[in-house]
View 1 (cartoon, one colour):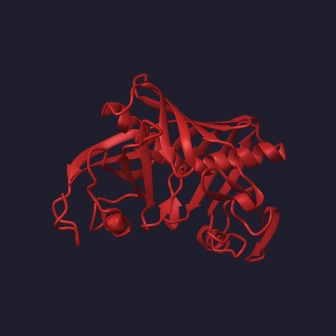
View 2 (cartoon, one colour):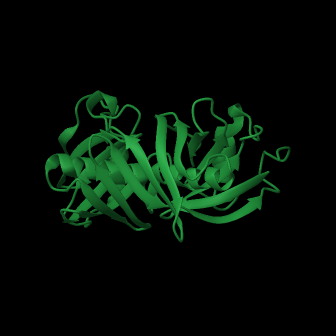
Length: 279
């Protein structure tokens, strides 16, 4: 079975092309993803993307986190997906439509020394639409004697945003306590953001489904920009810095994410535990 390894700002994915035929049965995709995303026994990745045909768009984006859970959206992943389908000829450069569980998204894809993708991420959702048991806006969590104000928003998937002055706390302990809070019935991604200026912010994200910090999170970057703008501490156009790189986020009625996508290598799965008969 052939695959492509790609990343968006260090958030890395295994792409499986099912545009012409199904490679992994739906009832085994979760199991397959857990194995192929394992960094010791598989290819390694924060998630896996299946490229499929769509009746309502240029292609269908089917995304799984590395733990095998299905997710509606992935900001960095959809940029990789968009580059791939244009390079493969499934869509033409320019405006590309992609079907996701979060709806049909429009992307601008072009090449200027490298591949650039501008994604219309749609409108942010708040309150019960996160989903959350209530409108989590300024909810205070006290952990290890430090108070954290949590703001919840859905930018394709649920996110909790916390603005901090420093990172002098147990990142994983605090992130996991919020991630698994009963306030979020489906769990949440957790973003800690340090404002550098009105148009610049540094973000660290703990991703649900990966259950670890990732080098970058596209939907998380959007969430921080939305919450920061709503609180009046960030402008409508903001540069989000992460350990993996920079994204430019525009906040209006809808959110726009601008960034690149890199193709690292192509390969063929030879021996993958439990999947010897595929490929």
